[in-house]
Structure formats: C-alpha cells, structure tokens
Length: 121
Length: 230
Picture (cartoon, each protein chain N blue to C red):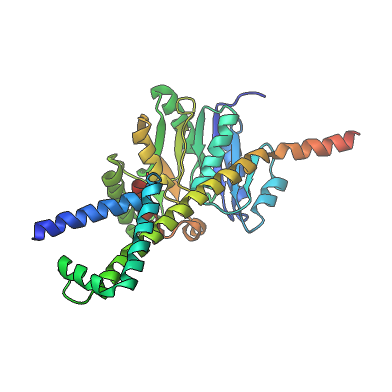
C-alpha cells in the first residue's frame, strides 16, 4: 500500500510540476481548470457523491475534506501559474528596458565636445 | 570608430559616493579600455555624477531597477555592438582591483578561454570575515551540486567573458542569481573556463553595500525555480 501511495504522489507531483511550470500544455491547464469547475458544480448539486468518492479513496471523514484537498491542489496550481506569468512579464519588461537603455546610451565625452562646439561657434 | 579589444562593464546602483574614485583608479591603470557603466535605476545621483564628472565613458541607464544580472546583460549587449572581444565585469563599489585585469586578458589570449572566473580564494581577500569565508565555501558546494562544475569561488563579480568566441552569451536571471546562471551557461554553451586569483578588498563601504548573506536564500530559490521552469 505504501509503495502505491508513493507512486501516486510521484505521479501527482510530476503532473503538477509540468502543469505549473511548463509553458507548454496550456490547453491541458485550461482543461484541468474546466474539469475542476465542473467537479465543483457537481459536488454542489450532489454533496453525498463526494462522501461516496471520499470513502472510495479511503479518506475516513466526510466528502467535504476531499473537496478541501482538491481545492488546496488547485490553489497551488493557480499560484504557480501566476508566478510563472509574473516571471514571463518580468522577462519581457527587462528586454524593453534594455532596448531603451542601449538606444539612449551616452558617451560622456560627447558632453565636452558639445561644449567645445559651442565655444567654437 | 577605433576598435577596442578590452571592455569593462560596471553595473552601478546607488554608488554616488564612490563611483568617481573607482573610475579614476580604473582609468589610471586601464586608459585604453572601453568602459561601460550601466546605471540600474539608481535612486541617488549616481547617473548625474558620472555624466558630469567623467569623460570617455559609455553611460547606459535602466529607467527602473531590475537587478545586477539585468544590468550586466545590458552592458554585454552593448559591448557586442561595439565589437569588443574581451569583456571584464567589474564592481562599482571598489571591491575589485584594476591591476587584476591585465593577467586575465593575457590568459584569455594565450589559452583562448571562453570565460575566466576570478576567485578570491586563489587570490587575496582583504578583510573578509571568517564566517563569510565558510559561507562562500558552502555556496561553492551548492554550485557544484546544481551545475556539476566545481569551482573554488562561485559568487565573485570579477570575470572575463570572451565575446569574440561566445557572441551568443546571454543571461536571463535579473537578480543576484545570475552568478549561478553564468556557471550553468558555461556548461550549456560548452565554454572553456579557468579560475584565476583576484583581489577582493572588503572596505567598510563595500561590506554595507554588498549583498547580505540572507539574500542567498533568494538565490537558491531562483536557481531551483529557474531549473524547473525551463
């Protein structure tokens, strides 16, 4: 049983990492969110099915605990997605600032030349 | 435009008190090199001080503060435009010694190395605390673990990058974790590397300005997140 548990948690971890941190599989991500949305509605309509499912999965208390577990997982996924999104935005922002900095590069000698030009004219 | 062989990048963030002194010393020793200063959105007068009080220095400015890694990469991109062959990264707080530059350049020419990393443990670390010594030793083991490259010193700002050989050199980490990223780049770009002694002078000023050791937590997380998100 313990081996099965480790195996399952490994699968969940790998799936989570792929969904959360990879820029690919955007459709899977959306599909997963949609699936959980449907699941949430389903549990609202028939709460007792959550109880049945949780007994099947071996969670000893009520089905609401199962829903809690799923929500925590989803929240993590949301957070990781947001984090990655922030990283991507930061990258784009950096490239923009860099481009601007290089365009407006300034050679301090120019300063003197300009002054000399003025003095000459 | 006359082509200059050696370029020196100085990322600068709020250094109005010392930057002129650092530049003066640098110019005395290296009058023929191209100096590129990247102001990383300083909130003090660093930019104006450099603009008014120096000559023959390229001055670039990030409009907002992005981090040392970003400032270095901006300097590298600019150096590529100037066709610079050998690029030295130099700190703006006076920690590094301009005397170290020539041996690095000579070595790079002689051995055609892709990158030369400065090491304070091979060279001289003036006024370094015991604790910092051991702390940096541990960080080299972390680097070894994550990149497979074993060095004597990992987060040292003094290096030479051979742009002639590696014109595609690009860092993406904006913060202080760029030092670890460089070591990853050595691995992924198959750069030939060597470590050389360099002097680091810990003055009271640089001790205050330098990064706190707590920032290493940030660096470790950035490195690990960077690895998963590729």
